[in-house]
Length: 197
Ligand code: GLN
Image 1 (spheres, helix red, strand yellow):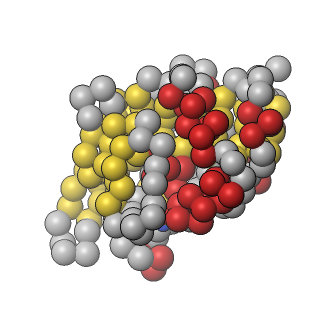
Image 2: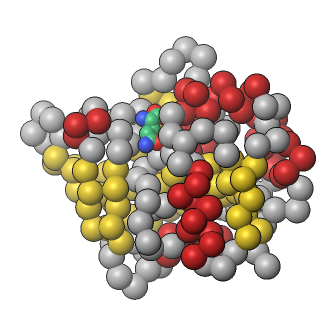
């Protein structure tokens, strides 16, 4: 059976566990380093990346998770999880760090504040039909490195009136990341895509 860990320190890890259950996979709520043994993949959930930085260090998981990710463990990062994977984070606190495993730059809350949270139907490369994407204080991907594939983009009208296509699902090697929350629906296709590539 496929065993996927979900970092369960903060944020919406329960919703990810529900998605894994829908796929018939075993989901493991990872709260300490020993639980990283024998996983087929790992999910970094949405939530608050600044808090996750603190809790990952307090639980002694920053170093072992970083090592697993850089060694090629398949990873799905969503929203704050995308921020944790990014090479560069704009708009972070001075003590904000990330695993620097995915060659993108992200701007925290890059689509505006909570009131500007929104939904969109996205065409995702590799999925037959569009998927509903919920963006909640989402990070905006502002730069994408050469080795990164953009699997979906969202056309977004920014507060200054300009409209741009912004990458919303990106992949590099064993990593897939989304700026939205694929876990807060009944649709596990993105999870399947991330770990069946
Ligand atoms: N704005 C949050 C952060 O910076 C991410 C939001 C989310 O995960 N829904 O960490």
